[in-house]
Length: 633
Image 1 (tube, rainbow, N blue to C red):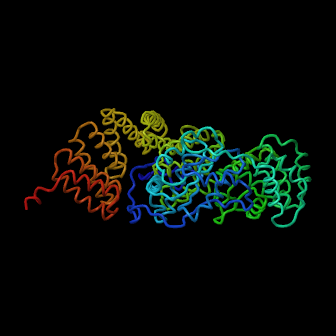
Image 2 (tube, rainbow, N blue to C red):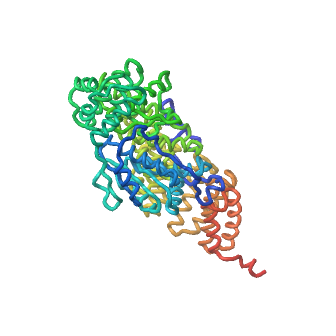
Image 3 (cartoon, one colour):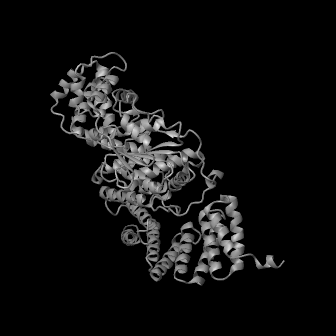
């Protein structure tokens, strides 16, 4: 926070500084011209995963995709080749459509991040300038106003996660892939993707096995049948046979020694086991790396999440050669979801699953940017967040360690600053619970996390929950830190805000007045926190219809901020805009008009003519009508 409070001690929650009591209010940023003009899309904008070089068959399904004009949902078993089909067809559309864009859609947050990534690719100068919510909205606006584009939404698990996007984007093409088959009524055509025919499976096996050199493929039909013709298993088995000159019959015998295949996941587990047993002698890191990758999202796992030890890239190369991972030019790695599910299963030496999970949490902590509040790191956060969320989905909160709590605290700050308040609430809730479990409910940094949770709940509109959390925070902080501690004062101010939003304005006025008096005594009359509390009290008085009191307090806060913080500070601008509005509401139109004119010059110079603050000031001034003195001249 800005009042000199620091994270305390060696076990402080300090993700790039004190994240304790997070202020996630309005930000003012100097925007480049492109941020205020219309969205533009350069030609040739393509982001589609590299498809398999050994794609086989699927002519009927490709033709069906060609024939449709509306959304198509490609459904089928895990590992059956839904993503491969969508990627193959999408790459065929590159000469005819722009952009052709791939979005991992396992959750609503993934979809939002993918849309933000599209907007950033359209206008790279906005990276680190606009928050994710604004970037997502710009992408949606462009998609709704143009045609000739293609989006692939890969691995949708809940139709609700893409409902908003589908409702706003009817002019281009959208292809979805999903293992869910019965939830798409009214969305578009459902294209069920079966396992390939036997001859196509054998063709796939043969292409992969003989790609680099001739190989004995006797018994390929029997091996493919034993694998259920599942393309993922067939390709991994064929890659093994190619690398080791093993015949299909010999490979089938090796599988037989490990027991029956069982379910698709069981069968793939045995196929992977055969490969990893061999790699244990030639690429000793391969098994551990695959287990580590299982705890992240499947798509484009950043290189920063890989262990910085010798032999990692060689091990990844072996895994890629055996069709178990996909390597990208930027150093990131993609893994099939079914392979990840197998990698998270217990097998071999006891404790390996827990070790991989702990290593993944540590990797996330090291990769998390040092300053979540710094827009320069937001692009890194956008790439990292899907892997944080995937890790949370696959892990029990009871096992969260300090490293993961640190990541969640930093993620909550990033999410709140980017307008993703519900996601911020989830991050802070889990971080707060984890810290309390590790160090007790009264540990000071954990109290700061609870304060951050209260603010996130308020901004998410969950006022009753915020008030209850704030009351408990005030009780605990008063007992543990003392009534004059900055955290305690902020908790009381937050509780007053919650009361005001709940309609309890008189109760809010009483509490906020007490807080303001205590802040003046403890922090001084000119601290940012004190002046902000004064401005907050003015807003509560205004909500109660006490215009005179609101004007006096807001004028004092605005003058203090202007003197101490400068006229272009975000808090100063907000206070002055509020003050002009109060003058207008009180009938002092001449004073309001003069203030708006001065503010308009500052906002236009500092932010640009099309920034929301500038637009608001211009429109508010317009409602007052022309200056009578000027009109009479």
